[in-house]
Image 1 (cartoon, one colour):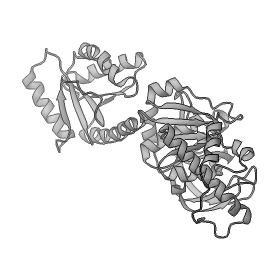
Image 2 (cartoon, rainbow, N blue to C red):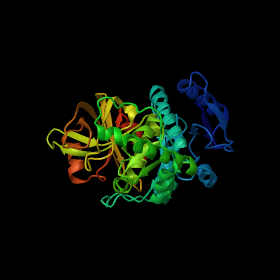
Image 3 (tube, rainbow, N blue to C red):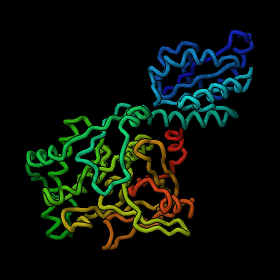
Image 4 (cartoon, rainbow, N blue to C red):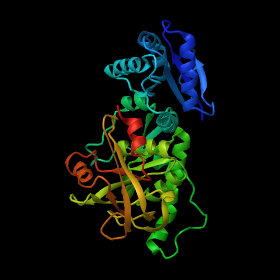
Length: 405
């Protein structure tokens, strides 16, 4: 963990008095002395896990304004400005003026102020969020084929994604994947997890592994951190599905989404950067408006999210391989960002049970939303598309901090 503290100080204030306040304040929030003190030297601003601007006194608004163009040239709009203040020597007043200026000019920031215990805890959260931003910055996410035709409300703004998160979207023709499938050799390794499977599933397994190997080839060739796949085209073109490939690749640390849904892919990438774990891309199949209980389902799920899994056919087509996964019951977060990052949904709940019915996509979970009817109303009145990402654990505050404007 590297946290750097840069300072803003007005020449009108007595340095001896300000220095005493500074020492006492920093010792109270950083008793181990782990912060790197950069003082007024901003030459390496933006290079640490977390960079804090300690507004030591009032009268520093103009100093910040002079520094701002250089800070933006290094970090753009990807990283908010975190203004640390003790509240002494009019430092809080100056911080509020600076933050107001940033907001008015479409920039993000936060004043970090309160008790030493609160400031320590907030810095710990922000350090994790800042590490996630650094992890996202420079990522390359592929769109293999175009988004599926039915995703009429799931467009993405590549320039906004690049500006806000530093992620580059890479368009890859479906023909390139088809050529890769033809090129990779048949897999002759023992077929795993097929005990009790039907002859149809055993017959589809080698083809599903070829799709996995071809997608791995695409990832390496284009240097991707993840991708979303126009997977339904595979049903007619190679008479198989990408479900197993996506399940395996997510478990290997890539972000692998379905149906060419770029906002869902982006949500999965943000979630993995924040949490370090996979997310389940699924769509609501049933919603109880009165209780906020929601059934989510899809035919693929990251294998590392499951406590156990088996193979079935793909639900809609009845061919290829779908994943019937069983997920750990307990706290979850349901998350989705819009493709321009201008809006998002994050709400916590409990995964209360798994089910396995034949008339739905193969992995099926029931989530009881903490917000109850309010969460249900979001889905029924103003949703961000159909796919949403389910994460193990409660992460709403982290998501709010990385995406809130």
